Image 1: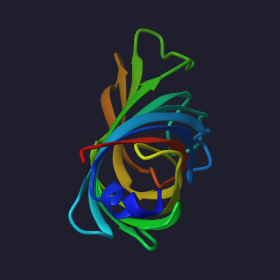
Image 2: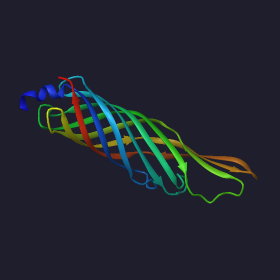
Image 3: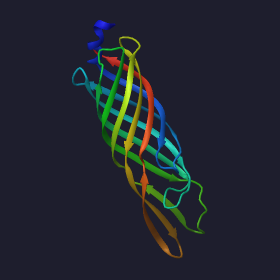
Image 4: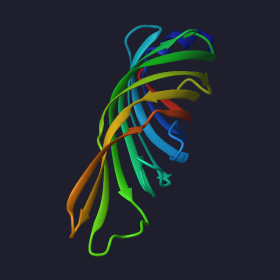
Length: 192
């Protein structure tokens, strides 16, 4: 396999991944991550990657934060990956980039206001990504990888209370969506 290692690093790669998402915000629980990506080499050490991940996490009520409910997060990321040892069976790498972080919040059980309602929204938007990882070749076309990423986003959110007696009131809040992702998976190489 040693002679073909340069050729392996120059192939298109499809990756399938899973893992866990640990939010920095203390009222958000850990979620399970699933996703996939595509990697296009631009040199022996550099590749451009596009990834889509998805996870859902539960929240618990906290003052001026999200109430009990479920937060769905789906980042679409474009990053640059640099491999420190591209011709080796085991190669550490670093990634840097960003993308659009889709987020949707569904409020769960809440003490209802008679004939009224409470809703919360979290705005989607741009996020930065930093990460390190390593890949290990299993065969000429298959490799295993493990990665730790840090996504950076603080999102504007809003609590909306519909009360038939006092009308609609809105409270703007901020939600810390900074998250550490521990991902692992398989990469499948295509091409010569």
